[in-house]
Image 1: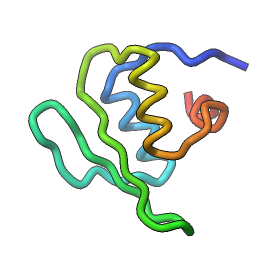
Image 2: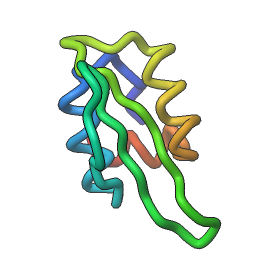
Image 3: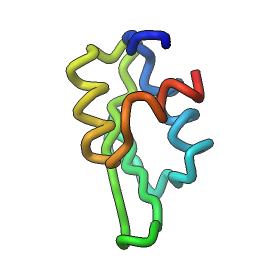
Length: 75
């Protein structure tokens, strides 16, 4: 299985959109995405940086309640 590498904010947003998230607003260089699931609304904030640190990416996945292995399927 591939490892989690640093990605750009735009790439992360594209992957999250494929996973059912919808961008609802942008404040400066941060985009807020939401998804409606069986537990209710789930949201996350993605900075539009050229390269996100792995720790930041893991934090985004935690906010979005997404497992790393599920995210890696979309790379």
